[in-house]
Length: 126
Image (cartoon, rainbow, N blue to C red; front, side, top):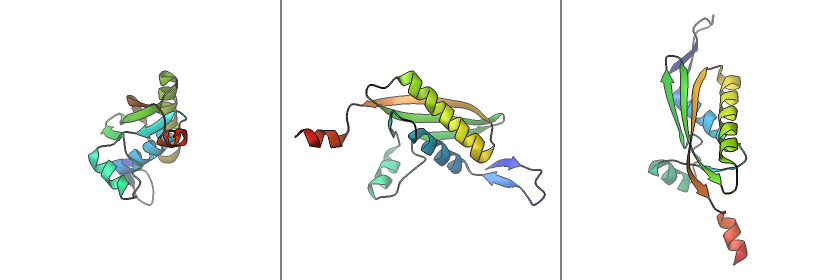
């Protein structure tokens, strides 16, 4: 748990790392050019049963200086990788600043694949 502020007169606020993962995952998926986020086997199985995992592809590490985030994304073919990666970083940092007031020290974007075309496009061709 991460303490946001200890000076509140009514008590303290703690934010679980899973909440930060969800916020970062949604912010990354909002960026144009991101095809999907890369999860592990368990998150992929969970999604097959209909439960959306918004924190998929996001790893959060709480450090003394703030929050360090690693994002694993698959991008659409033809987009500018540096431009989309910068937009992912900016969007995550802005979302966490607005929603949690946490200091984000790093947002590392890992491009783990490129999606050539969607499955919907393949069925339209045949």
